[in-house]
Image 1: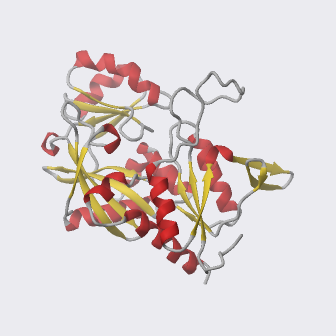
Image 2 (image 1 turned 180 degrees about the vertical axis):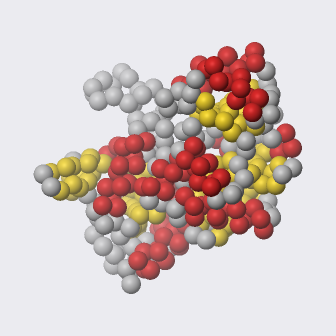
Image 3 (image 1 turned 30 degrees about the horizontal axis):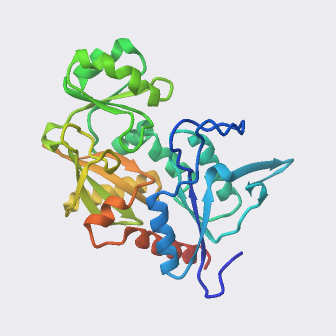
Length: 326
């Protein structure tokens, strides 16, 4: 396909299908709920930005990509046909279900020589909260006190190690505020465990200190390349402690400190990401990095700031393409 007639690029957007409810199947049974091509707001914003900047969006859904291994060669088929060609790919993967296959699809594009924004290994590091914390603490970037537990009998000890109740308990691979709970007493601990372990992998739980001075809020820094292009404060809705926009949290524009900006950029570079949403919590000991998100949404930030983050990402993508193909 190559460049379009006006000299713009064909920019691929690799995303996952949105599951409305239930779970996917391969039986063809129409009575059960299956994955549907429901476009996310982030994807729609990127499509709009690509077009407005004079380029052509090429929409690709992971579950329509078939990895084809043929003797000594491998490639991707799309809907059973020859893969659509594009100049560069922006990966937007990261759902908990089928994540290994999503990552393998990203990797296959790389093996085929496709330039990718947010590559396979970088996304894998960011998605795994354990690996992220290993890398962040190795680089002397502060994170909340956390103990990883895989056996029930170690829970009480872990809670003491992070400072006692209340504590935050989360799965290693949750997203958008799922698989996270605040536990205020031992009595409430047991009622939450069954739900939490459903989101986990191999019964892995993260026991994390509750930072009271954060007042149930955090700060999302949107990093593209080597700079923070926009930031917002996220405040949990009344009766909840999760500040994620997907969980109904309130958002407002915020000016980060110089230290917070540097930490956000460093964290992104450590993971190897081209762009990210870095979640920072303010504590009495300084800023703490809660998470480095390889697939941040844009709805909240575009509501409260004048920065067009999707357009900034597309602009970065185009510049990177030209840099790589000089």
